[in-house]
Image (tube, rainbow, N blue to C red):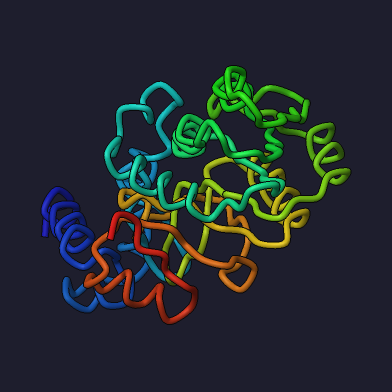
Length: 252
């Protein structure tokens, strides 16, 4: 089989099954697992898959830059944000992660909702400037421009000084096997620090992130209260997620 044919077969398997198992692909094509792993390395280098132990998963479209992500799954993010707002109790303290779904939460807070919002996102903070009663605390650090958030040692240290009732966590990949992942190691560390400071953590999971994976693990499903998603509840990946964590259906 030509290299181009192998590539097409692997990409079709990824599209159809939502994953590539190297051992299975090798048996189907009559090749060694080393050959399949080499093909997967090349596909990953082109951004066409995310390599994981034993094979590969779909790469998350949420790895695009901040401006690009603002145009991805806009309706789904609005549904997820609306469901998240319903989980915020009056008078509570909320940590909002960075990202476009968190920005939708900030924009969707009712004008009469008294709460305290802690965030390391300048864009989220700016969206709350005109909110009549919400108190806003901004955590500082090195600006990670890709996601428009503060990160690095200074930001993690600042995060360790706060406490909250709930944290709304943004990730780029949500997969029943790969877990909750994101595209930058420092950003993953900041998310872990924020999650450790809240009584409950909910994952913001618009459908394009569900079934996808990114390079860096954030936290385990056992550390979150639920995944808020607009993904099809009847899909296999959501069903498998539901076996590990509460799935909060957005817009249903």
